[in-house]
Every structure is written in structure tokens, then in C-alpha cells.
Image (cartoon, rainbow, N blue to C red; front, side, top):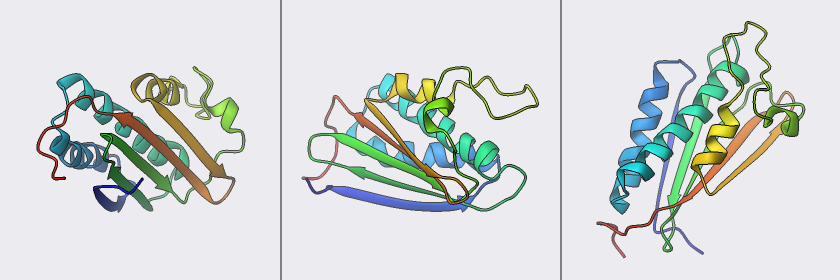
Length: 148
């Protein structure tokens, strides 16, 4: 199925850009006239994925984070958050609730669990030393101003 609308965004992995990413994706998804809950869920899931790229993917360095989003005719939104950071050695372990690779004790290890609870589907692909892509899929219940 071909998307009816798409967008791409690239920004630096600075913590101040997390809210920018969340807001940009929300503005894109707003064309579907989502409920407040749907919009909040998408914004939160995007925030979690971007924060993972900043904190875990690039650790102490600043580099690019890439977001692409597509809206499909069945009101599905597919959002990809990609970094070219250190990657995840064990995706299964990383997706376990309460697991964190941070040794400082500042992270709860709930990012992937939160994403999974808010989206219809979460897919993670990663290669050590090459980066990580998180794909979030969420169906929007309403059909607002989206052009056919």
C-alpha cells in the first residue's frame, strides 16, 4: 500500500531537540484529526525513541537522528526513528522492561515497554557499531482533513 503523505526530518542528537521531534511528528499526524489520547500516545512514543537515540545510541557524542513518517490510506501512521550510533547488541534484552545499558542509575529501562504499550506495533532493528532503527506503527481512529 502506497502512503498518501510522507515527511522526513534530520536533526542533531541534542536533548533539546527531543521536544522538536515530538512536535514535528505531531504536526504531521494532526492532518488525520487524531483524538487527544492518540496524539499523546504518538508524541510519547516518539519522545522515548528519540531519547534512546540521544542517550544510548550516541552516548557522549552529537550526531544526526533521522525521522521519517508516512500516513497510509487505512489511517495507519508509520514513524521511523533512526540513528547511526553504537547499536544494540541484544535487542531482546534491550526490550525487556527495566533493562537499561546506563550504569548511572538515572534510567528506568522502560522506553521500549512504553513504546509497545502506546503503539500497535514496534519493530527494532540494530547492528552493533552501525546504529538502530525503531519503527512505530499506530492506527488513527478518525479521518480528519487528510486529502484523498
